[in-house]
Amino acid sequence: MLPLILVLGLHLAGQTLPDSSSGLLVVRLEGFSSEEGFARLAVFDSEEYWPEDIENAVVRLTSSIQGDTVIMHLTGLAAGEYAMAAFHDKDGDAVFDRGLFGVPTEDYGFSNNARGSTGPPDFEDALVMFEADTLIIEISIH
Image 1 (cartoon, one colour):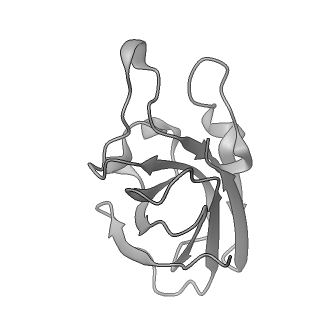
Image 2 (cartoon, rainbow, N blue to C red):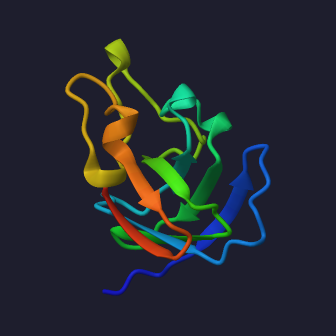
Image 3 (cartoon, rainbow, N blue to C red):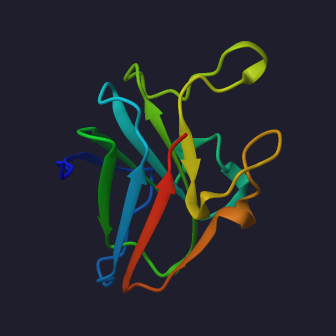
């Protein structure tokens, strides 16, 4: 079954993306366990807010889910190094939910499919180089 791709919104986090860039960033999020809620993606250009403070991400994207894969397209992003964090917001509250002792209750993933041993991966492990051309990133959600 081919996934139906709907990007519902692009939210800029207090920054304006340059108009001169013609690059395309394609992020393929795979492994959604259900179609309830939303897929959420945050793009970071600095370790300072990584990955918890999504309000300070360079870009935030939200999409509905149909099937087990969501594909998001982002244009106008300046060339540089970025790290991405994504999660399945099952209850649609725009918050990455955690249970007892801070254990995540919603599925998540990071660029480079980076994983941390007892928490999120290091920023450097999730960094990808975007050269303002076309870059396709695949992130497994679990």
